[in-house]
Image (cartoon, rainbow, N blue to C red):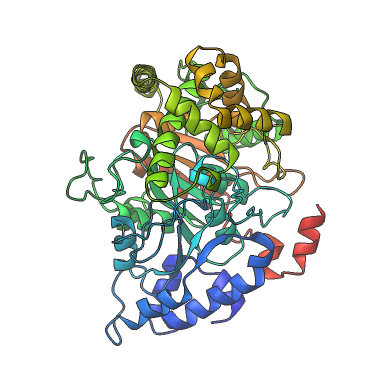
Length: 511
């Protein structure tokens, strides 16, 4: 198999080629590594290369037998949640160095499916942003235009898939972290329902259940088959979600029923939405009507600013706990980035009662979305409020970061927060951090499945996906609709020039 052939195959097709004896697992790994060598200096997608571990994984298989539906396909996991025994799970930080003692259930299932894991991808520290800019490793870049973000927090994964290193890669999504990078990089990204994929055994529910795990891919059928691989309970999971009526790989081949879809392009925060994002949704609405679906304006009755506040308070608690755990394991406060230290200080200063009140509000959002879904099968919105941003856009001003860092170091930050003095500042942090990505957090706090579908490219050549949110447990409806849209407006062959020719990186950077 040649380089161009590798790029023309999705994971399902590569596995079939291995099963037919047309190519071997070591040959596919070599092709992936060659592509990585070509593009990685430009996109900076990996946190850790695992070539030796990947070759050992292949060598451990019985001769002539490749178990699993993805037997022999090269694959990347994210350096968060996806524990691999004998390696640290770095979480985009210098602070997390403890070695995992066992594979996570996700990694175990991926390996059992025959996927050859040869690296871990980058993310922002503690997966806290919609861009991928870890100071521990450096920014990941968008293969379409290198001076723009690939999104986050699964930005390294999306960059690697868009650049042709692998046909799909693992991610997780606690506030849009699969959908945002998929939208930025012209890829398909499905965030499963809460409880669909077990993150255990080291973790019960990530971010109180706001986060779920899946893949970012170039083809819908790969995402469907990957969900079959990943889905299902593990002993000790907090609850068991109803299983689908058939494997997702079979359901995705069936057309969706005629759906009633409501769409909205207004930011839940009242912040601006770029004309490109509006055009993406309006084009999709027209396409859906042509496919026979009923499409009407509408949105759930939810206070978007309250949701942003609640989401930020989730950060306060989980960051404070994560920093505390790392400190107990030997990390220094200086090992964390300034924003992480500020969020941890705010978390330590937030009372348990206040945090619990914010957790209770999740129910308000879920009930409002539930009422909406009594009348509409899906909600259609932009995935992003505009095209993928340039690096550094949305970073806090230097003076604000310096001031907050000083307040944090002196211990004043927590005291001011307890007194309520910082309420306007916290409101502004919530707005600033979410103004480019205001549409995705609703699915996380309600536990519902959602996807980003690559149906729009902007005037500057950058991709911009659209989002669909479904009822709890209805991943099959999303996958069926995505497959229908994929057939109506194919995107698989649409790769950035960088994937074919690294000389194009100069052009991509110039834009």
